[in-house]
Image 1 (cartoon, each protein chain N blue to C red):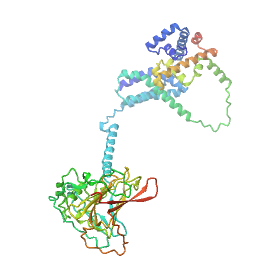
Image 2 (image 1 turned 45 degrees about the vertical axis):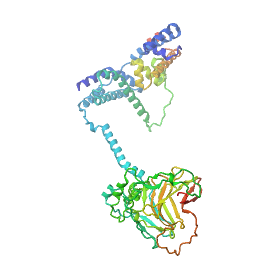
Image 3 (image 1 turned 135 degrees about the vertical axis):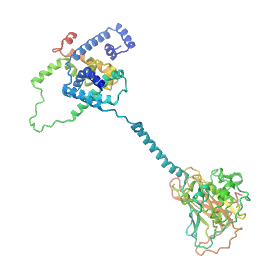
Length: 186
Length: 425
């Protein structure tokens, strides 16, 4: 079906990067995020094959973005759960490394804390997710609510508290490594 | 409005509908602190949007994209499977459900209805060790087609286990149906059941004249038709009287299995009343009628209402038809067994015509008795091993003993009710 191939190509061009970025924000790893996005698109192909011509193209387009983000999020969460159940076994490691961060890690942490990403890392998982969905992907409250299975009111409250906390963090921590727009803002 | 309101954030992010946004806008004109909060939120949102969207966008590898397109091509080659309507899961589920429901109704409904129609089997057994007779079912005399056409009495026989020769089967002279004035109705008035609580010892005093004719005959069938269909049976050497045919038409009991389902109908001891033998009270004053029932013995809290009716026997003018009935005062109780003892001073012979248990908890029995003065049989010889019973010289006709249990869980006891015919006259 050439039309489906063409539609798939357009979807990849439009949502490939946002989805990888979104999945990476959940998983924190690029390769896993790519696998999740690949599975998301294959899932879209399967569903499209099962539900041919059930909806008009306009109706599909209206739901495709939210559908892709929802499937991507669910797959990422499933991937996280699977990874959390995997216990790495290393019986040949008699020496246990110190839990104290090394000098390089300490420096990295300080740099991270001074950046905007560092501020975001201080938020809760839900707050980070809605911040990224809102400001990184320009989704509305309703779309975010559909993706995260939250109510619109809850999404608004999460965003409100997240922005409030970000402001307080920026006032407390010195903006040593801030990017230019944040310096200008402060 | 509080400055820490999510609505302000939603307004700053343009998430409010125009109406709410207009209200917030009007409020911000008056509230400088809230206006500053909104401005700060707008600025932070712009910063976040610019920063986050400027993050390096990583795309899929060529291998990932190739696998996606390969999957798309494979799915494109798979032709959509056209499943017939009758093979779709929903249709198959509906068919299976209908099948299950149909089978359930088909299998369970006859059993339930049969159980509802049936009642406890009735057996008449004599008291031991007195000479006794049991009612045993014989083979059906009527052909299956006849059974379906004429719902009539079972062709049962009385298997006499009596060791005494004084229990002959004495035929009753038949009364032609057209000459029988009682044809089409039973002349015995209905007993006044449950009209009053009777304290023991009970002497029936309910006036029989006040009651309407008893409704033992089938109201849907004319009496003549019952007689015409019931009489030409093979075993009936003596045509049964019309009254018996009317009784018979109320409940067909034409096989052994039907005999066990006569609890809600009238259970008759014999196909033809003419073959029911009389029992001499002198030899066997006591008759035990046990009704097999799974229910516990009847618990009598206060009383039951035994009622006695006696009328002249339509086919034997010298004899009398005696009917007594019991109905507990409480629903749900059943009489499982009772003993009837006839007064030898009043009754010389008796025979059980039938037992009616159509109503739960109600047990009525119909006897034909031969009064002592009208006894026509040869005098019986005194039994050698039977205890002699002193004459009571009372007007009591019979005594009924009903095993009962105390309602408060006491010891089982036997309630005894002495019934007299004088009051019913």
